[in-house]
Image 1 (cartoon, rainbow, N blue to C red):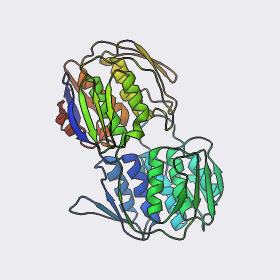
Image 2 (cartoon, rainbow, N blue to C red):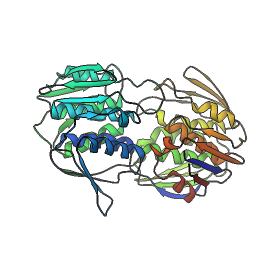
Image 3 (cartoon, rainbow, N blue to C red):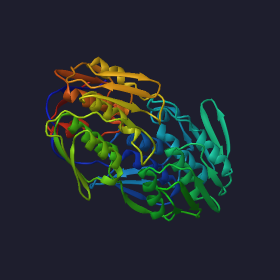
Image 4 (cartoon, helix red, strand yellow):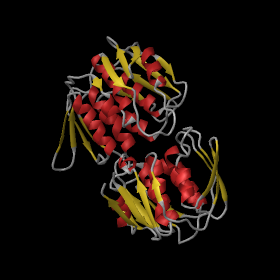
Length: 419
């Protein structure tokens, strides 16, 4: 199993470009099932989750190819196998995103209950309850979801809780349903708006994405299109926090800064000087120790849960005490134990972490438990005295494109060790 070896102490300095967003790309790849023609994607990130989604569609009969410009072409118009098997689904919860498109396009889907990061309960009941309201019959047997429908019928659906993948799944399903569907209490994350933009380019009729209410008028079919995947806001936020933690200076290009407003404001409170332009963010920490900043995670436009672990590292190095409140997932403090092994002073109670900043931490051998926990351990290794070895880095490869290359370019001493 591959590992990352980090020799801490170097400030990150330099300029990088942001990769395409995994969380935007995955539902769009699933959405190609809705189409009868070729779809071309540009700026797809090279990540394990993307590869897994390709393997999943390929196992069902989709044709996927890569051209000399590194653009991916997907044609999923003639699926021959309407089952998403456990062997692929177990590694990635986003696999559930093929459920809505398959039911609305083919009238049938058999999907293994998904796996992925162990960061708490992410129930699929929101997806299933909404599909039932659209007219699908649902059964659960032997770890598989089976859904059937002659044709989905538009309905007024109110989600019982905020769910990003649930919003995306039902929005895709409603595109080919008969009549009008209204979705209420939906997720407002930028990736939901990106998916709506992509679907509308193919000929869907979606209004309101990005707000609490989405309206979809069903159409008979969708058309071919070419789409460029937007920048990954969580990747950008991670590198900004990394630069702040190391006292460095960084500029990130090819990003939509407004999608990181909450993170930017808290980095300013931590003492960072930040300049925001149309498609770039610059941060300068001037070798200063960060100030403690309380954070409380919530759905967009609040502070993202996917940045909680990284910002906890910054607070662990701060001059003072802070409180981190995790309100999205109930089991997302698994990085705390590993950070404390490096000398951090973090205590947890329920969904609250109390952090007492320390002046220095020490390198250690640590183990990643999920994607964003992996990022936090790498950030800690960048500032720690001595060497840090981060094990189980297959988690990081699910969501960060060439992370050791980008960090090395910024001056980090980081090496990937073979298994």
